[in-house]
Amino acid sequence: MAATSGGVTTFVREATGLVKELSWVDVFVWSVIFFPWLTSWSGLFWVTPDYYLNVNYYLSLGVWAITALVVVLLYWQLTTAMPRSGGDYVFVSRAIAGSVGFVASFIFYIALIADPGSAGAYWGFSEAGLQLSFYGQMVNDTGLTNLGNFLSPFTTSSPLALFAASAVLLVVGAVGVTLGGRVFRTIIYAFFAFGAITLFIVMAMFVLNDQSTFAADYAKYFSGGVPGVFSAAANSNYSPGYNLATLGLIVPVIFVSLGPFPTIQMVGGEIKNPKRSILYGAVGAELASILIFVLMTYLFDHSIGISFLEAWTVTQGYSSTVPSALAMVFYPNSALLWVITAGLFIGNIGWWWLALVFASRIPMAWAFDRVVPSQLAHVSDRFHTPTTAVAMTVLISTIPMYLLFNASFISTQLNGTFLFTIAWLVSAVAAIVLPFRRRSLFESSRANARILGLPVMSWVGMISLVVLGYLSYNAFTNPVIGPDALISRLVVLAIIAGGAAIYAVSYFYNRSRGVDLKLLSGELPPE
Image: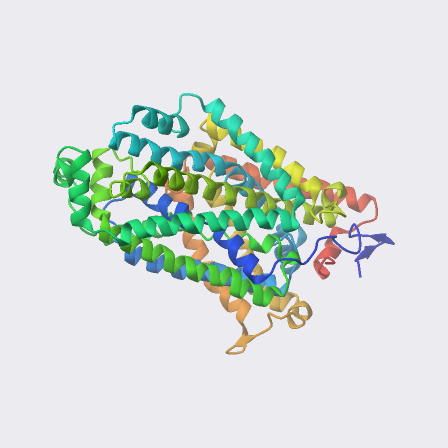
């Protein structure tokens, strides 16, 4: 039943219009696509050596795996208790207060559209460009080298052309997201299948070779060979080995590269049997991802060598490349090159389009509670997707996308990772207090288990609070993760203040019409 105030219905309608159509397999695939195995793992070794050397990746990945599982378990508990689309907004508004829920989810929304929701093509062009430019240099093909440099936003001669191509892909993605259902799931499954094929190809290239083979093959294309790389790096004071002193800084960097950035909860109302589906799907995907990332790291180290990548990065002015580019030394084949390049690009497009799905559910949930105009709660009777919210999200995302390609604002003044951690921290608090502040809601949910007399949800929330606090601190203070200049901190404050101002205006406007938004904290919105 909808909450009422003065005879006025608070919720927009008695049902969202969304359909429970996602199985645990869908959740698994969507979770993997949002941090695709090959492109995410490639990003780790493309970015980290630029800032940190002598990294013990095995130990770092082990610590990261613990933090990753904690975060995924947090959202498994919350979504099981409150299986509604809108995710963190619903969790926090019901467990703590509507105002806190709106501000936290507003922060989440801005972070989501400012990075995943706008940057997919940016990173796709980057990784594809690195793959092509390295191969071009290796085989002395000026055309491929120039193409790779053109595609990379860091070296392109025409950022406007890359933005235009990205805008076209954004429109295509928006159409797919709007159509939803079987159409969009087919697209995502195609991305998953091609990504898996590409991953296994690169994995096979590592498995079938070792460091001695790499040294022999590398010397065919680059004078001085592998010894020359290590010698040049030694002149810049690099020597192979591990330095555990930076472990505390490395783990948050790995989290940014490999995730998880929990978002599947945004479609919680569209998941069949969330308790089972998120456990098998999201938690299962994270376990599978941990195994894949560790295995890929071992195979890369065995066949090429992490120390070689670090040394090579030093010789390139602390500018690394994707590991799959180095693997081309084993098999200099054009067809193989283009398959891997396409895999790197398409992998980044998949999570970009999924981000539009997740982000669109946030304003839809706000509108369903009348916090923002109710038109944003419109759900198509034919496609069962929030078309107006999708359209708004796509239009807004073009702004940070343009800034990514043509200005430095996103990279130097918007700390998106820190914004995410703020929202996650608030949700961790919601998990701690929900069983006590909303006892009847908790007891009637499927997440009402206890350990040592304390709700499992509260245990997970407390552990998550520590883990996320650590990540948040690093995101705020470590410039490798996000900008930490005064202007970037002022931008964060402006976003928080903006969310608070919007809610305040909505609260008093609704109260003037006889609607008390505080009533929403007493019950879940309808499905």
